[in-house]
Image (cartoon, rainbow, N blue to C red; front, top):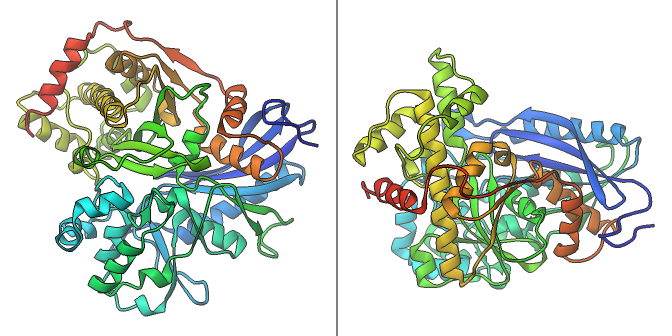
Length: 503
């Protein structure tokens, strides 16, 4: 029998989180007992973009095969006690499903360049301020709305029965139920974020202007914590409940933030960095649109008010480039060496769209440095330190701007996700923001996924504050305080001027 979230259940209960990131996927088994989760991995697999003749895709069917294997391993590891499964993924991408439930093609990957120039095309007929007033979304060329318009001339739209966003596609294959979970739907540009419903005017515009059958193919919206039903017959050795969690991985990550108050900023740090605040209402002002902030939805009726920053993708792609060229570069020694270099020698704009595609990242960074009148040598250590300094500067700017636009003050920054293990980046973030940084949990996305499942299944109760007490009990946290490194506020102000010199 379950007690409330703070006290925890009397006996252990088991849930499985499917967490599909931009470069890898995992299945995480959560064991809930005495008010805390213990996590173990039952599946891990790669999830890189797949090059094809028509562009860059995601091998969704291959991913699902790995997901099935990881869930079956979780059933075995739990001794057959596994109760449910929930799926979270990266945002914006979708699969088109026909009436028989089959994919028409592998979903396009958001790093594909077919959307270049599409935002400008859309805004010629649908003013940017009108779209922002409804969707509240940061303009990025890969937003789902722009992906759909890029596919407007595809002659197979008549065969499409549903457009399913990536976590919803996986949940459909698990349960047979077609839905759109709202935290993921809020990344599309098709949602009215204030009402948490599809925007009738935006959908009608896509239908009238481009012939896209958007009103017909969008599925029913559901909130995080909705039980979709049991897994399909024969899919696993025993039936499980499928729960719609915070389907966007950042929504799940923010659900796990180990905070006891509301005066915090968050950084969901991984391939991308999502930097912002948790609010009760969206910020849809002209000033917010001009600053290019996004309003994505969270659990329990919340809004994640944030800025997308390129994140550790820039570093990982740099390492891949060096290794492909035969250079002896490994990440951990690189980070150790970077910590010994002087800070802020070269800083760049980590929101620059040139950093989005795969390719020779170090050359792009050196080009950007030259454009701003800075010197960045062809040296992996110098480039690594430049990336980390630049990320910390981007975090500083995003948090300050979010607070000003939302009328909020914060006293702490919480960093969740794999990037919380990067000690130099966490300390630089404390120095840049002038605030304590609490790092952890590293498995924040999976933990948030599991917390929502456990509450949906009755193993936990209470609001998100109660869930966060379980997150605190389940996490190992490290606090970084400003004033450790010899970099002061004026140094960061000067760095900001240099990073923007080319703009």
